[in-house]
Length: 607
Image 1 (cartoon, one colour):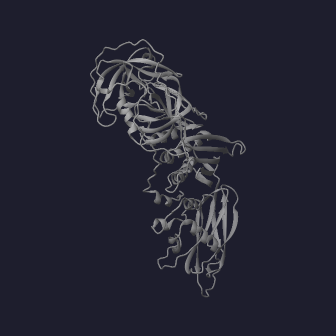
Image 2 (tube, one colour; image 1 turned 45 degrees about the vertical axis):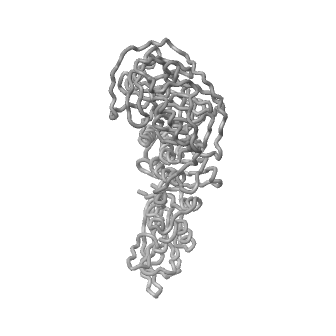
Image 3 (cartoon, one colour; image 1 turned 90 degrees about the vertical axis):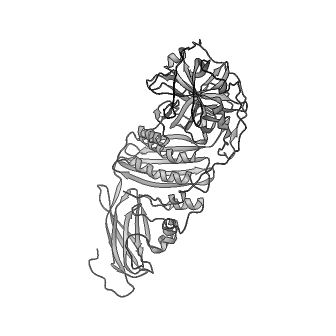
């Protein structure tokens, strides 16, 4: 198996990536009357507000059963029981109702945040309002655009909803919860445009279960002057467009200046974030023995989530931040090279999250576009662009696998994405990744079958001819001839090595040994461009003047140089030659030659 160039990761090991701080915000003041948790008592009756179809808000009655003590954040939770036609229709408190504001005597006490799987779904846990507003004690950190787009918010205190007869529940239920008992947050992640294995991989990374469907498969409009109300259905997005991923929940409260709180539990619990907030359309509530859930679709982007904390999420209506643009042009050359399929989507700006889930989204997109997985050959051109990357950067590579070529391709993409998104030199925003992929299920492989040299004994500074026989998979041999120059300072046993790019590649010896480092973003791109590609035939003259010479590896001088410097010097001196093919190159062959400045007779039959 080919070993990809991993040395760059050494200087990223202790990297800390910080977004510019926007400072602390003033306390969050809901645009409605509130009731402190200290005033809430068992037996109190009220209502919760949510959306179960379309955009129409409805209410259903709730009764306070008990106060559930907890340590940590959120603190004490309020156990409530729900009843009435809405709850009968939905089969109980559904996932997606998280964030639904709960009122007693028209005063806001908090929002529905948690429930239980495989239980009677009329019981739920309310996160107190005090805990939810505490998320605004954290500083707001978000990326500039270079300056974010902000729209002045016009607040509304209208909390009137469609309503129903409030059937009051008089049952008293004693429930004891310990800290070890598990309850689930009521917001699943939905995704579209991805293969099943990609959703499973992303789910494992995020430690969340991802459900297929429920997201929009088109670009979303931006609603610059949105007016939202408590109880409205909202969504949070990680990706949107031809690939979509996010969650649907409920808006709890809005302040006069347009800040909001929602969900009553974390989305991904990533602290300071920059995720789009959307208005959502609810198709229906899907009944389930495990847990009923809302099936929703985002309608428009209305703001941004900037806080993702254990007590809930918060952000600003009318704030719009940078995103990551992704496009894939995909062609199966077995069908028609001129007919291309395309995917285009955007991702929330989160460099650490991009570095982990973006490659998996590419994998899921490839699976979806190709309509299969398994063996094959890929030609991939990747272009990276950004606001602080005016000239962009691109690379082309070939990949082959007899088992799963898409995974091989994405493994390489993970490394590149890490280096770009998490580089310690420059924040790239907005950021774009654009890929052109040509695929075939056939092995488009070029095998190195034979290597011969015209001399076995050579002199320093002399040129030798190297003949290489190459065979495309199940086709006739191809003969290629090259010349390599014998270094002036070489002597004794040396080797001519012919190999595929990426097989025993030239490495970053100076970085690995701590003798040098990459010190600028332009230098990082230069070193990334110096990586070997899998479609290259590499010819090297390898020597070492030490008595411990082993004809495997690089020349001793190279321990002081970066990879780009090594390649440039050796190409200029003629000890390295690179032939680019239209195949994935496989194989490694060696020929030993002796460098001697004296007069040694040349043996016959040297091939």
